[in-house]
Image 1 (cartoon, rainbow, N blue to C red):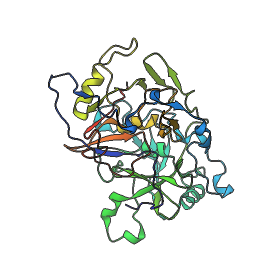
Image 2: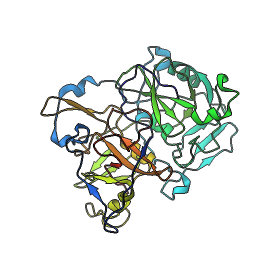
Image 3: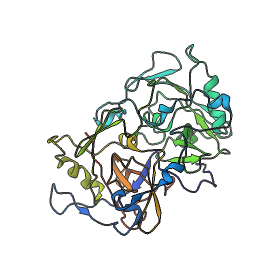
Amino acid sequence: MPKAPHVVAVVSLLVVVATARCGTSSDAGTPAVDGGGADDATATGADASSSTALDAAKDAPTGTFGTGDASLDAGRPDYEAWANWPMPNPASLGLPNSQSYDTSVAGVVLDRVTNLEWQATSAADLDTVADALAYCQALVLDGKSDWRLPSRIELVSIYDSTRLGPGFDPVFVISVRSADASNASTTQDADFWTSSLDPTTKTSAWLGAIYWESLVLGETDSGNARCVRGGPAADVPPPARYEVRADTVYDTGTRLTWQRDDSGVLIAWADAPAYCASLHADADAGDDWRLPSLNELQTIYDENGSLVESDAGTFTEFDIDLATFPSAKADYYWSSASFDAKDKGAISFAPSFVDTVSLDDTPVTHPGKAFVRCVK
């Protein structure tokens, strides 16, 4: 899979495959937890640091990519950074908002959950994000000409973690690059441009991989484009999109309710569901708290992030809204995704990793464990 050699730091991953050594609890039904990671800077919550004015330096528009070409950048909506619709989940998982598609219009896939319309067959051989933006802007399909390059979170909405290579429903046809035409297996490794800006470099675009991971590509890499249209008329970014209570956070866009404070300790993936089932946040008692899906967990990822200074004068980037989730860690959080006996899905809320990461040895301070933020 191509990487941009000049891109050193990445804000997060579209999908991180975390190889976990899943331990078993010594007491059935009681999560085995670990307070480890306290000496690791990435495992320090924002409440142990002080915010600085450096946030003001991260002034790029959320979720947008500036090509320098006004004709390409014009009319690109700001709402693309956030899911302002229920996040679809793989149908086989039995979770709310199961992925469902209408293919009654030739060449178009309508997502029945988000109401976004997708180009059924992707375009290959697009060498830069500017090429991808221009391609979608010029596309006329089903008599409509308002197609655009999807954002990171929009591409996430059609990702299916239960399908390994490619991670899309078969209704989405993947074009093979002309250079790879003799190797049909390359469809498993195809990468898709998005319109979302990498705020670390401000010159690269997120590229969503259809296997397990994602990259941030520079202007010399090549990818596919699957254009999209539709969506809400305006965006409501954090913190206004959140309704904060004492112990819970309601996302008015996705209509998910989140645990405001995370687990606070590192937990093995096998024990994470029991931890969520034990929650009684606010007055919301019951057994409906659960581990979020890989797609759902990415809806609270903040593409601009927050820079925080520690007492020692070092800076950490937290890719989550700290006003809403003040105890957040710049670290890994488990999702419910399970790829096989060892490989489990996690999202990094810190700009330290790119591509697939094995928790057998990364981070070295807590192999096989991550934090948990439950949802309902």
